[in-house]
Each structure stands twice: as C-alpha cells, then as structure tokens.
Length: 265
Image (cartoon, rainbow, N blue to C red; front, side, top):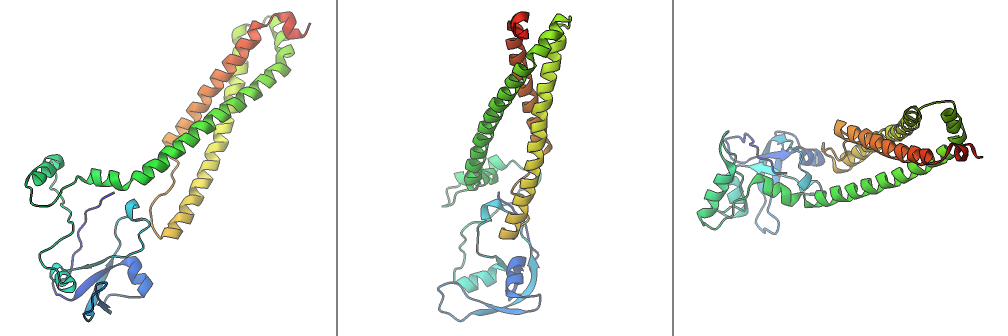
C-alpha cells in the first residue's frame, strides 16, 4: 500500500525527526544531537538535533525492510547528499474531489523524464507476493472442503447403514418419506455445522497466535491474519450446503431400497 502523509518539520535547519523504532533502538530523545553521513560519503558527518519522533502508518510492502527513516528539511537533505535540485520520487496528495486517473494521464503526457503512477497501481505491484499467498491459501481451503465433504459423506453412509433397520421400521409404521428425510438431513446438517464450529474456533486461536508472533517479530501493528464475520458465515454456509447434499444422497440411497431389503430380510 502507498501512504501519503505530512510531518511538521521545524523551521530551523539542522533538525531531524526520527522514526520511533529508530529512536528507540538508538536510545535517542528530542533534544539529543546525532551525526549523520551518507553511505560511502568521505566527508565529515553533519550534526543534527532530534526535534521529535514519528510513527509511520503500517505498510505491508515494507514489512521486511530493515532500514529506518529520518525526516529532515529539503535544504538539509540536499547539503547532506550533495545533490541539489534532484529527486528520486515524490508523492502527490490530491485535493478532495480531484480525479486521480486524469491527473496521472496529464502528468505522463508532459514527457518531462518522469513516470506517474496511481497509488492503487503501486499498491498492486508491491502486493503481488501477498496475492500469491492468498491464492495458495484459497487452494488449500478448497482441498480441505473437498476432503471434509468426503469424510462427512463416509460417516453419514455408515450411519445410514447402521440405522437402516430402524428407518425401515419407521417406514413400516407409516412414517412418511418426508419425515425420515428431514430427520436424516437434519442430523447431517447438524454434524456438518458442528465441524464448522470446531474449525472456526481453531481458526480464531491460530489467527490470534499468528498475529501475536509476527507483530512481535516485525515490531508492527499490521494484521497478518483475520477471521471476519464473512469468513464465519461462509464456513457455516458451506457446511450447511454440504450437509444438505450428503444427507439428500444418503436418504435417496435409502429410499431406493425395498422395505424388506431395509429390514434385512
């Protein structure tokens, strides 16, 4: 994701604002003096006064970044780097109601040696790894649903085999097929939703553990795993559909048998 934000830098030169994690690692506080030098620069380091600290918004694209950020005024940055009137990239924050697509098109048509990108395009490029991981998880989920459905079908068929005499007696006593169908399918749906409830509970526990571990490991507030209401509804919805399908197939198999076959005679 791409974030645009501003930091109120002091008007006086020679002052910097440190990323809070950097200030914590170096045990620095506002008012302390630090010496900064560009990598590979043989010139003497320049002294700056720490004006404050800042916590940047969580950014998944920079989660593995080991470097830390320092903000300073543009003249100080130019003097420190020795590069004047040059920039690697910059971010434009549009006014409310401005059309971002037309702005990007207009900037690229200027042909002044730079390339403008929409924030969503940059976010999509930086999130390709997360998309691959998401698709991998979807594939695992699909295989898990198929395996669970096969397991549920086996349990229901075994249960029908064990109860077929009892169900045959119910048919002899005059119980309608509809009543037997509701009984078998209802039990199957209940069994499937019980499995879904156990799965949701396990997912909540695992998700909490994943967030606790990786938040501490990367020292960030990012959410790495989330079980939302939509996920819960989807789990129980799939369980209900699978239960209805398996239960219907089991009762259809039962009703195809003659009463004598059901009773084992």
